[in-house]
Image (tube, rainbow, N blue to C red; front, side, top):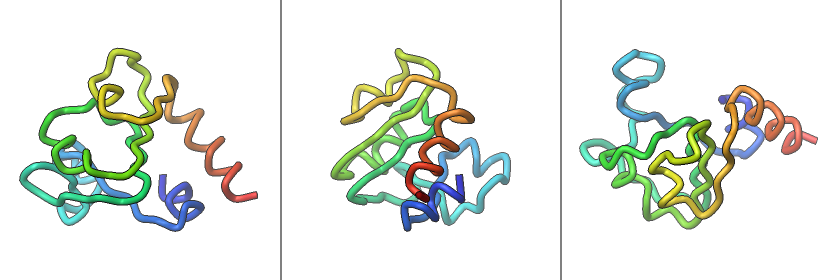
Length: 99
């Protein structure tokens, strides 16, 4: 994920469950009770679309969602959706953007 963020010249944010697991620090959490972000492009990777998270990012200019579940609520707010495994899609995007 960090390689993709570098290729996009951006930063990595997190949902509540990732912060709870201590995979990322609390300052990176996006959501209703944490940070609200409004980037030009928000890439929601593996985000289910919990209301608390969506409140923190729904004002982004363009939302691109990647999720294995085609019925995930995140697709209701996404401008573009990719149904697939993040472990396949993220490396492919990173390689494409790094060329």
